[in-house]
Length: 76
View (tube, helix red, strand yellow):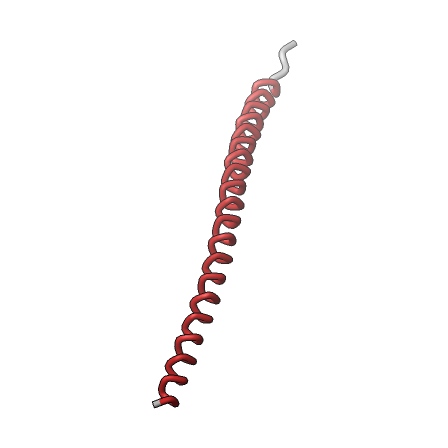
């Protein structure tokens, strides 16, 4: 005696299998994207630190120049 529910169950199982495969692919894609974004964040953090250091160096040089100009002004 054939079970009439069997084809529907087989279709449901196949649909579930397809959905699981899609979710696995999506998970792998998101994992790769996450890895890329973390690397980009790290790179940008290093770049930011360098820019802050350059900014501080430039500030010291500008303040030094201003002090020298003020001292020249008072000597005149």
